[in-house]
View 1 (cartoon, rainbow, N blue to C red):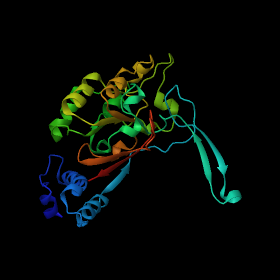
View 2 (cartoon, rainbow, N blue to C red):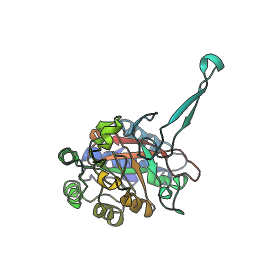
View 3 (cartoon, rainbow, N blue to C red):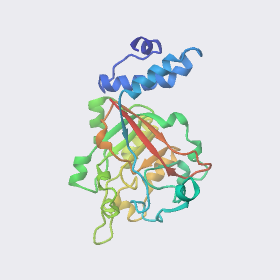
View 4 (cartoon, helix red, strand yellow):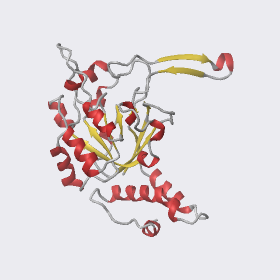
Length: 285
């Protein structure tokens, strides 16, 4: 396996550690093998798949159903059983929900006409190194906490620069409040939401300087609750306006490392889609 990795030009151990570097190497080789291996040689892809499957898979996705937490302006999901095994020999349900339901993708077209829709997101932007910025301790002390440039530089002091093309997730442990909608909204007596969010400085650093592919979080919104109370979604609009996508309502970020994992972000190919439930899977050293 190591010989094969050297053959495709991968062999350097990153500051994320040997386990993380091996996963990243296998991930990169898995993606590149089709271009580097002879058409008759299927061993390269098979080996890469074996490496990935030997590691731990973590589901970063909430199961969705009627009654789950959601954006304040969304109606609840409706599910109707049209056919049953007992009566018809098979079961078919009809599901009615908005695109932004459960753990979901927000494509650029969600906020900006003429930018990428769900079906136009590049496949290469669905397989990425995973970067986790862990601020859950700070959020536990201040639910209105917003990510700072200092949080990013602290991560980089431990792991090196945020990789180009990465998926950056903000870990707040807010997902532990799932599925209690009131706890996620964390509304006070004045009807002000109190939950953490991103900051413009951090998003500019990550997207414009580090060149990340996408980002995600555990809350219902990119913007902190004190902003969304006033229907201020300017930070979400900023990300999508750059023609990048994001994932909302992530789960289980406490089960993945800050660096060294890779992530698959998947969702149905909805023609001209403005959003849809997603399945997000991390492969962990």
